[in-house]
Length: 220
Length: 220
Image (cartoon, rainbow over the protein chains, first blue to last red):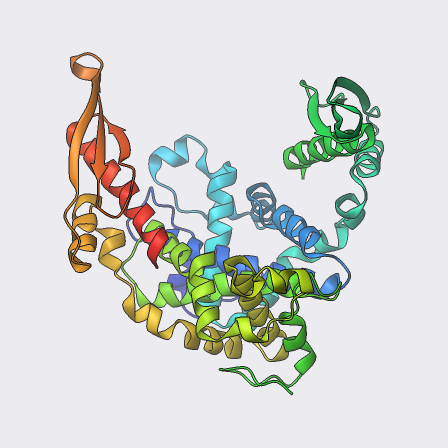
């Protein structure tokens, strides 16, 4: 009999199925993953809605994406030592499937679906809240809501990295219909990131935003 | 005081907000739409999971997409005469915003979010179930799970439309690395739809699948 951290399954076959990768059996965790992914999205949306009554929809959407993306889920799954109890086919086991982000995050979503089927929405919500407790406290809302240049600067400073440099690479159009193209260079990325805008400032903000997005998707 | 079909709001300010487009006020329905969209996704996922115990994850995902996409939501919103009670800014009202798919579907999602906040998940689930009752009964699962050529043929027959014709428009490559390109022509669409495959049959199936997708997105 298998216990799972944070929730005791009444119907253990649900936990069993949630842990079973498709490399093992036709009765695997893919359908539960479909269900759990959707529930996770709703639960995290509800938590962010309550927690940040002043954030506009766009910021809520960005925050949610960062909380439910594969890398984040894989990190949470590792915190639960999910890799140790996953059921994988021999090929997947030998090739290290138990440490692959995709397999771990899918299994965690499947477990969320299984908790819901085994109990109800509120219990599932509590389970998810438990998972995300620390992470929600760590959220740096400023980095999502501040203007992109400030946010990028603070992001780099917090990691003791050099500040970005901006340079104009193109300036087109007549007086009132100018288009500026700017490159943003940061030490972490090999290629400069370009963006355009109607003013130098707009172009820089756009380039900073793009750069921050690339950096954030690679890290947290 | 405003009643809403299918649910009586205790807190009517939630309904008010759900009906308020951003063209009216900073206190509009965008945050509720964020919440409602996520809840809708989870509720529909749960209903499909229960209703189709044998469908694999990919089919469930496709079914869900067709049920929660903008056009479907706008149709449901029209069934509730949502356009008549929307609060729009003058510009949007004059340009016919009350009949635009995007505005209608966003408002319906916002209402789903508002119902949840006003009650609980199970009540919200009942409300959504009521909305989708007829549509769920109409779902043609076969058209999603059958092979694309068969599904396309049946789709057209059910609507008393002429059958599709397929023709090879290109055949490239050497004996064991052939690539066939096929065009599928149906009466409903102006342009033939092309797809490629390693055999004539593969290319036809791919073209049929694409064609069915286009037809379905225009209809349901």
